[in-house]
Image (cartoon, rainbow, N blue to C red; front, side, top):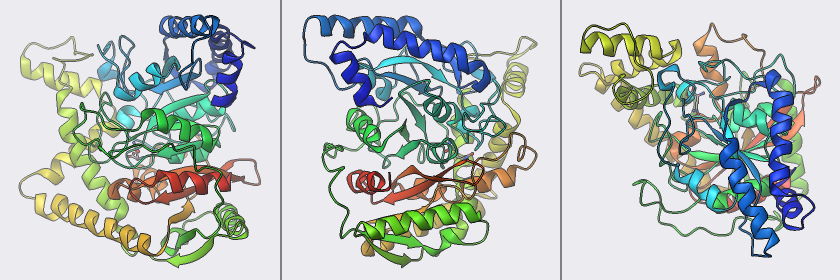
Length: 469
Ligand code: GLN
């Protein structure tokens, strides 16, 4: 069900918002024991909001843009009074006293917030298998991962358990799971959407964005969420255009760049064929295709894993058993309390990253690793800026393969990190991106095409994605 369809059904009285919410909760009750996308349901809040919308309909009042639309929230964003675990045991029992700005804006737009969605612990992962609360299954193939870290958010939309969801993307966590589950996932430009109320992983890379079934729905949600927030110092004051307005404008004459580094070794044959078909489609619609080069691409994964872990090691210092959630019961002093809480509360991948991040920031290694990675980040950004002198957007695969099997990469963190090879660079450069379904493998697994756009040019990005769709 699309946003327009849900809103229209509620506005016309075909269904009551309360009944619509109840039917989504029924689907969740029936299907989520298999998928495990949800960590907590917020039925009371959903019912209250739905009843408020129904009352507005009854009185014939003008309805807000998301009136009655059932939406789920990744569990790294805060919702007042609802559990916020970030997929970690260390936040067990924590209930934040405030809404994230994105959550507050959806709420004000009339959305019915169904609950919190499973994810990798502190959004660290590419398969959702790092969640302390168990993995999520891909609704399109139950033996496969849904991707990560926003696996629950992607799976919920793919399984029809929400009309749309919010996820976060630090290195690919919206686009890659969207591609694995066959839905649309949008990474807005850094600063376009507020991060207030997002439990931080790597603050210079983290973004909030929507999962939807259509590109138009992604544009509608961006309309609601984008714009300056005084509570996030990195949010941009640039005005917010209506992202739905230009969606159907012809793409004729747009210049589409094809970066050769994204079609090299390691790319699955069926994924390549799907992307090539997508490029043919754009050419047929009047786009011109241009070969471009992003010469520093090979350094993106190492630079990302130095910078992301460095920021994570600092951000995660606040989880010490004093301020939030879990505290180890077996401690006889302050320092054993800290140590046992962090030892028992964090999972293996989070510990690995805290160690790596602490190492690259330590006095003796800072210049060799952290400073070097920052310099590489500048070069990677320049690669994009130079490419965008010649073209309007870039089109690439979102991920090198379709969804892999549960357990397939859990023993090999490096193989897991390579699942992000086409996505991390956009986060390092701050540009916007989207994954849109563009085909299926011979065994029926979804394949996603990634469109990358200039800073704050989501409008062109969405127009091209809409043409692909
Ligand atoms: N998979 C990447 C990582 O593990 C990206 C995660 C994300 O975007 N949150 O860091």
